[in-house]
Length: 247
Image 1 (tube, one colour):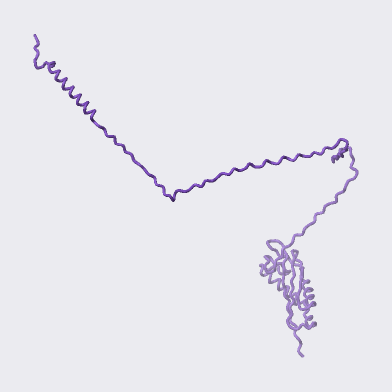
Image 2: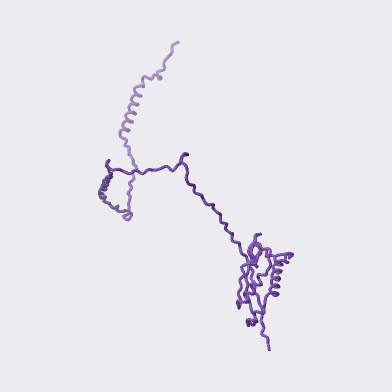
């Protein structure tokens, strides 16, 4: 079977027309491409810094002086060495050993006296009678129940002794009429003995009489402070009155 060609389907006839159309399009694109102008935009900013005149400080210019170099140190003083001539004789000090060998004999022995230790007596504390923790115990007051009772008992015993032994006639003999007071201070030491008697009165004879009577006080049990025997100071006023006899 023979194939027949369609005369309308022949493309070679129209090829020249298509060529001309394409050429015209290319030339048009090229022309417009050459004639087109591009405008370049540039974003440029300008800045101006203004500095106030008050903030501008003048920087002083300091001139640097040329400092002269320090003077060189003085030359060292040469040490003078005294040269001893060989002809002079120099005395040499001989150092003898103090160590003794076994062959040497010790001719003299120095005796050392015996050192005696001196006993320093400890000072005993003194406490007033009114402040003592444990009062001295007067003979006959041992059975008192407490410290206050022993104080009252002791004072009563001393008053009784003075009333019986003190010679009040001395006041009349000395013409000391009226009320006479003799102040007596004594101590009952850490052994219970009465010591350190001091008296002060209107006459020396009355002071001596008061001292005589106080020396008659018996030995007592010593007072104690913090469970330690101490010296107790006792103050006693002796008062009596001498009346003038009326005729």
